[in-house]
Image 1: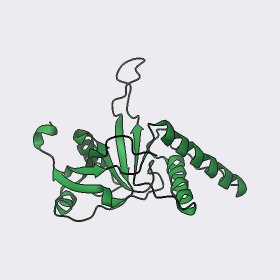
Image 2: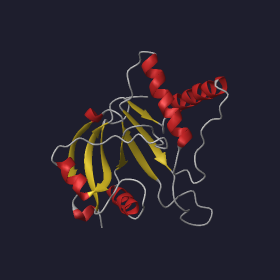
Image 3: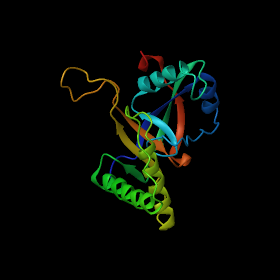
Image 4: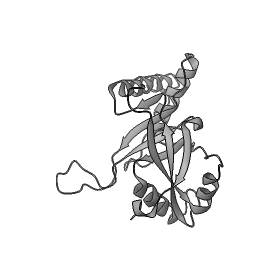
Length: 193
């Protein structure tokens, strides 16, 4: 966890247009706390990627599970990362590894198997459990809470044969502390086409 990078980022949240309008008028974001949320409980944003936020809302609108989205929409937010667990840094990776070790110990003591991520990695039960252990451990040790979690999500098909690039790879921000959301804004159409 660190404060070494710039603190403010732009994040994009895919949702229903009615929800977006409420958020733009100052309503609070709803925290996601599913047992598969890979960065743990929080409010999820696509960093610097409004098109991906809108695509997510469009994908969800076609599913029967998940939030009801009749009119896919995306809004932007100014996010202060503050105390960020950045999983792209060595210190962030070390924190995640440590939390995984704690989770392994807990499950061994209870003689229970560890949760597992889905094969397609879209439902991240193990990763979510690791993040929850990390948050709990920090609280029990009297350490300051993590405000945000940042991670790279490799998703989609390879762009070409033997490619290391994937069609839906993105950076996600999970805001654990809603005070880190400094403002929301309507995304101009020119950034969505």
